Image 1 (tube, rainbow, N blue to C red):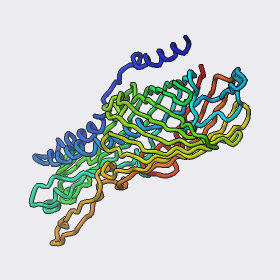
Image 2: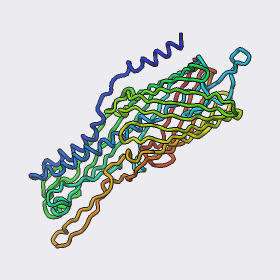
Image 3: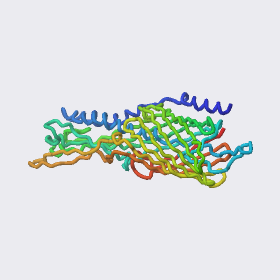
Image 4: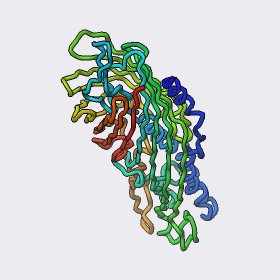
Length: 435
């Protein structure tokens, strides 16, 4: 009866969650529109609209890439393993607890729960999204160009030399709370369900600066406030948005291969259902699935393990990955286990890479009061342009079992390189109950 009640509560959880409060996907469009579309309306005549193509470029290309970057990172964060913890020896006809290692945190050992066994649990993770490809999120800069109003090529008119730099000043964070349950259907087949509740927060103050060429000629033609002779060339656009709701629900099947060997091997299929609201970064709007080969072996209280496989990710700007986890869990004391894992994901589709205004442009400008023309090279962004975002992380954690049926867990996930969107450290805490 207790097991049925636990499963019913887990399945009904989505009905109790409040809907998201905002449309986070509009946040960056709002920043770019406030600056490039509305910000120049005090500029004289047609100059007020000369950055409209830049606004359209930002809305069409940059905003979707930024949105997918954040949503994909949150939706793909690994959920903690719902391992059995303390196992039992039934050789005498009575369950006798085996005080060995309690299992890994994010990895999977090959062993299954056993027919009729059920574990339920809860985990909480905090993501402070600090940097992308080594650039702090608050310092990400994008450069927008003046409309080409004359002959093809920028620079033939002094106005075309004016550009706008926008630094996002972005502070992004997320909390992921997950309820999960795993049930042993047979002695070597488990099914599990994980329901994440996600809370996302974006805040900052975007700073736009006009790099004005026309001010050197006596009258600025593009400014946010003031006049042509006394222009205000900076504009700050604050934003503070949040949303919360159910993320992408995960369903897993785990099968332990019936091998007669010194090691254990199994297969894991993990499907993420697109239940999270894409417009609020609670999901990617697309299903994803991964298949992993699991290998583990016990050496007394020491259990090394390897997980390798393929991760299909169906969203835009989100490459499929070759995925691996290599590590071990080691019993320290009765009821206490240390776990160390290295988690890696290597992008396989270069055409799905995130590109945030890549490359540079050349402006051939007329030097004032001379016949000299000079070339100026403008980098569109300070974010490195690359066709992959491979990631490698270290997971360091503890499992503590105060009793045979109850566990607590804690883990720190730390990036080992700078590719991708990264948190300096992502802490996870949780609990697991065997029923």
